[in-house]
Length: 198
Figure (cartoon, one colour):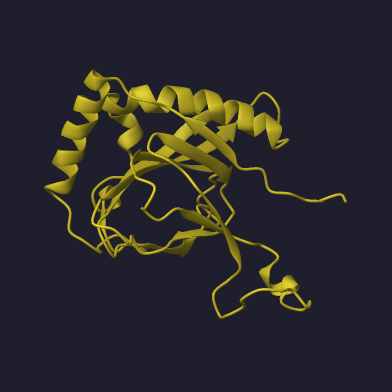
């Protein structure tokens, strides 16, 4: 059996020191005190997207961004993108999901955006929080086959289990979503978009 045209998703891990965690917690408290639930597109929880998509410029996140940048360079090469490209973090924001909060289906490449790689880092998450679900880009084609299992109006997809301090990288065009958080423990995800240029 040969599986053709797979979509590689890179999974990594970055664990902060106590000092790095303290600085990040301070940043997050500043953000949560100035944003309101459900005001950022597609999010029902809190999001820094309401006030800033440029958190990559905050030095309190360097501990996370530097190792993710190294991973983004390797992932870029694995995807077969243009060699010797300069990879940079184009945007960065954070979302907080309390019980019932979710993220609607979307991608990170809206045409003019020019984003090449999307990533999400799980700063706070436990095993019972919702995981990221990737939408199958062949959904419409698969529905023309006698595929087994439940098929309703929601697009077919695959969930990738993650733990606190894990991150995922994937091509920016892949559509994805997060189901409502089923537990009282909050989930905090930091998203980073990466672009490459010569």
